[in-house]
Image (cartoon, rainbow, N blue to C red):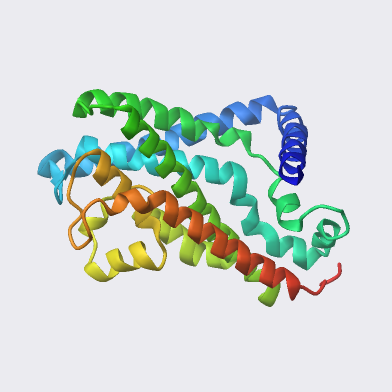
Length: 268
């Protein structure tokens, strides 16, 4: 019953947030156009890069687009649900985080549900278009199993990226500042997902698989769906993507709650 209560409460809070954002419809539409344009620009950059060489490692342009679309789709959901965690240090420094502690609901849940960035749906528009286009170009034989695996992998990617944002934000409980770590850790890790992991040095691939597991966001799942090899790793390692995402997020949540137990108000 507690889970049902939290789900209902989450949708009520989200609905209120969406209504507030829709008061500025022009900004909402321009944000969507801006996101679609930005991601299209990256795709064009890939095409220019591969115009002469045709292949990057063993990946062609359409396979890289498929890889990119998975990353953008999971990141879109991550932005909607978790991106505001990178601003946790601002709430702590201003003393406004205390309000999340005086209400009779889980502080993590309350902070998570306070914002729902609907303008990030522009990333979904781009990703869905790319999925449809690339599926025809690569003649992907979609089956129920592959579709379910893709959906599970996207959930795994959301949890990995969301978990990283949560983990970074937790640093603020000890240092009162954490947003800089977003640019040091999260931004470079996300850029890794734009291209096949196989093009990077072995040490980078190992880190992206077992320490900062962004290889499970799109590279390993895409290799399974496209039936491509992932050198230096066990065959079909991509099937572990949902499990890796769940474990990584639970670990991040544990660290966040541990930091919360040590939290001392900074005042305002």
